[in-house]
Image (cartoon, rainbow, N blue to C red; front, side, top):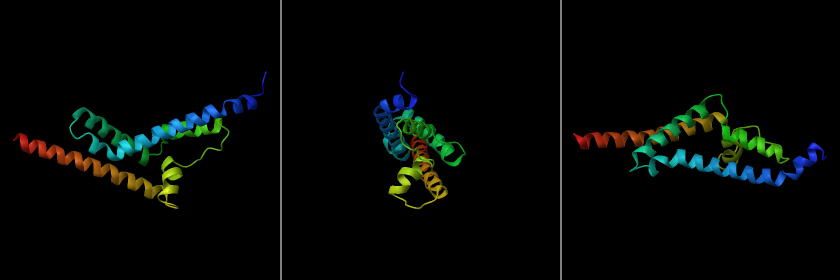
Length: 134
């Protein structure tokens, strides 16, 4: 029977692929939250899904809870034999590329700004529709 370490290294390539899949899903999720108001212009149901996504994103970003996708990616990276990062997804990936040496707090405020911007788009749409209906 193989040792636990040998079994883990045997499946390391699979875990690496799964890390990539989770990373891709995470990036798509972020794009959805940031750009969703532009993509849902004529789709009321999708608009409500996006608003729920914005609220969820704000709660995760501001609150003390880690993102489930980050936790999954970290767990899979550990199983792949890598040392998982310990900070948030934004600080680890986006912070290193776009905002080097920026605090988690500033990134959280930027995320809140993006969410507020999207909610303003929805408020403007609602206002225009209610004016047109009157």
